[in-house]
Amino acid sequence: MDKKTKGAWILSQSKSLDLVTGEGAARLENISYSGKIGRLYNLIRRNMPDAISPTINKDAVLRACQLNGIDRSTRETGLKILKDMGRIDVSGDGSVCVLGANSTAVLEVTAEIFASSSPTTDEEAVLELSNKVSERPVARIEAEEYIGDSFKIRKDSLSNLVDLCKLSAIIDEEKDRDKSILFNSNTFRDGSYARKTYLIIQGLPKSDAATLSEIQERLAKEGALHESTVEDVIGADLFRRLLSVGFFDRLEVSNSDESVGYITSPNDFQRFGRPFEEDPIDDAKALLASLTYGRTRSTYLRGSITMPDALLSALIDGREIGKNGVKAIGEDYHELEARQVVKVTKRSNDRYTMKLLKKDVGELALSIIRGTGAAQGALLLGGVAASGFRGPHDVRTSIRPKNTANDKKFVAEALDRLRSEG
Image (cartoon, rainbow, N blue to C red; front, side, top):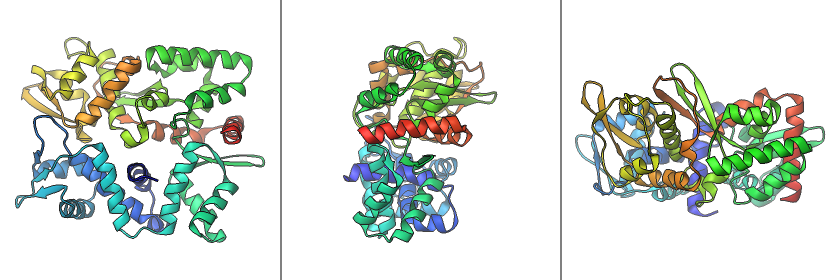
């Protein structure tokens, strides 16, 4: 596994491990540790044309960490490690100068920190297993044999290790009678989306296959659809089951009144490169979701977005958006501020401007807009400001525990087709 891919898995898995305690957390502590420092680096990094080595004051660093679950110990240790690696400078007053960084640098640094932390055989095995089941689903017995042989792990320890991966949502498992298959949220992100779609459609009744094909065509044309549209066309049961298997991406935007999702294809990011390595913690997806809200639901008086392509291009060029100040900027981009993707500046009373802090995140989002129009999807939120975002992995793992016996049977059979013919 190359350094970039390994760094992406560590970043992604460290977020899942935030919720794990006790013996399980200790068993994978180096993934958690290096992933948190990688996430810290991603938060404070800047990628702007007018500031090659920007400085962030101590309060801004502290606030960013607090909003993103980076505790004091990780912050202090992480800053020292990043300084020792020559990635940042820390001044006497606590301000941090980031010495130029893009997403690739974050992934490589994360992998380097992991390598230097004396990772265990179990941790290396978990990363390899995650990568393997992302290519195609794997029968649990085959997966245990593979990592047992590859990493010389005792048989009595293998089952506990896989169970730990399930507990932390690193890997998922579906069972149906004699089938027990492992998969994860990247099953449809490996460049074989068309072939895997064909295998899914093959197992459907003709009527379901026809409605799913209709949705596929609309997604290809429009880029994104409101979830109610998809559910109305293919039916609630099939919609839930396809979300469970990772066939669709559901991006969720929320405000103080409600949470609403829209559906995109995992292939949207794939066609522009390797989406998992480019966006392992969903910064670009969060940017797209915020712009979608601004375009479809914000009023003219608040400051609606009429040309997302032009707006993103201006942000990427390093321009400050908002002229004399726009009310919506101060209300709709809290999530992006927390992620340190944009900087929002108050100009007067309820008027704000915005500047992009990570050019590469904007470029990835722009590639999707130009390729499929994903930022033009219909979000039916009310007029209340958008304030939150959930990515496809979090959404899918929250749906799975609610699946019925028939849902589980569908998912197991779909995964078995992908496993057998992958």
